[in-house]
Structures are given as C-alpha cells and as structure tokens.
Length: 284
Ligand code: NAD
Image (cartoon, rainbow, N blue to C red):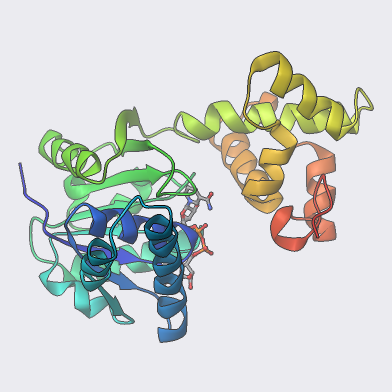
C-alpha cells in the first residue's frame, strides 16, 4: 500500500477547500490549486474561518490551527503536482473540464501517483480512460460540508486496482472519515437513492399533492430526516439536482429517473435554491 504524504487538490471551491482542510488536519502536506490566485486565496480564506471557529469553540488550539494552515500551499499551475503522491480533483462538475485536468495531472504526476475525482455524478471509468494509468484512478466522493460530514463514498472504476482502493481507504480514515466502497454506476449509491427521492418530492408539489412546507414536514417528522427533501434540494442547488437526475436518466435509460418538469422550470428561471436567494423557499 502506498503512503500518501503530499496531496494536490484541484479546485478551491466549497468542496476542494474542505478536502484541503481535512487533509491538512490529518497531517498531510497539501497544495490547493485553482485557476486564479484570487480563487485559491478565497478557498484558503474559508478554511481559515472554519479553523478560527473551531478555536473559538475550544475544539482546537491556536497553535494547532497555525500548523494546519502552514501545511497548505496555494497553486495556480498543475505543474506543481509534479512531486505529489496523489491528486483529488474537485473542479467544476463538467466532463470537459475534468478530462482536461486529468490529462494534465497524468502527464505531470510521477508514476504510481493516484488520481482521484470528487465528482458527484460523472463516470470514473470514463475519466480514467483519458489517462495512461486507469488502475490508479478512483472516485473519492466527499459530502458537503466536508469538515462536518463523515462519509466518503469511494468509487472503484472498472480498472481501479485493489492496492489503490486500499490506499485511498486508509487516506480517508486519516482524514477522519468513514469510507464506503461503491462500484462505478450512475449516481453511485448516494445520489442514486437521494435524488429520485428529491425528484419525487418535487413531483408532489408539481401535481398539487402538497405544498413544499407540507412535503418537508412529512419527511422530517414522519421519517426522522434532519431536513425535508425540498430544503435539502435548495441547499444542494436545483441546477445540481437537475444535472444529477439527467445523469441517472441518461445512464440507465429508465423513465423512472425523468426529471420533474417543475425542477426544469425553476432551473430555467434561475431559481437555483439558497445560492440565488430563491428555490422552493425564499432566502434573505
Ligand atoms: P465550486 O464551484 O464551489 O468549486 C469549483 C472550483 O473549481 C472553483 O473554484 C473553480 O474556479 C475551480 N476550477 C474550475 N476549473 C478548474 C480547473 N481547470 N483547474 C482548477 N480549478 C478549477 O464547486 P463545488 O461545489 O466545490 O464542486 C466541486 C466538485 O465537487 C464537483 O465535481 C461537484 O460535483 C463535487 N461535489 C459537490 C458537492 C456539493 O454539495 N457542492 C458534494 C459532493 C461533490
């Protein structure tokens, strides 16, 4: 099993920043990469804020916070991955972007280095196929917010080797996560189960079965979910929910995954949920 010491994280957004934070907290040397210095710094700013909150709540000392921050270096050049043991890609959910990133990482990184993607829905096997090391490519699907959520779904592509799987499993443990092994099929397990439930909740509103508040109340009080599916959809982003439903619909060719027309309408209107101030609910 390979020992991972130097981790390269591509994308300093919501997910990449969180991954860099938990990796540095696990003692790894982290390089956090984005397309511009401003984006990379923004990512680091969010990490600093998270850590400061931990210090103010007495969960971490200031010295520990500084050690974590010292382990994170910023980058705007994929060439900086040349001496890293592994990369986790958390760039925008777009296949063309991911394929380009993986081609560059493959050309830059040493033989034996592992290339992981945090994609929520794109096929790992297809990403692996553009590299010369498909056995070293794997999915490492963290949940949002990364520092809080325990789960990492580890997705084995068609060619992923057992050794790479074991290395990534132990890395997840080092990041204080619980890893679950899943094979590469549309939506993996998390989104294959979650998104059709959210889509069905949207159908309930679309067909006039109940209001968004009523749907959420039923699922919270009746099923003991911490938040209702429509609140969760607004939090995830309705554009993301639609994109994942499209992946399921296309990937399985089964009409049970058809996205609800109301979901499409909201996305077309720019009602994307919390991030745009309006989705199934209105946000100040
Ligand atoms: P985000 O928009 O917050 O961040 C994406 C970042 O990637 C941006 O800072 C962008 O500038 C950067 N980027 C784009 N192209 C790049 C490139 N070529 N090189 C380097 N950086 C680049 O998005 P996010 O929510 O952090 O999502 C990132 C990935 O994580 C996606 O694949 C998404 O599906 C997945 N994911 C998201 C969630 C979630 O709830 N947001 C959960 C699990 C997985």
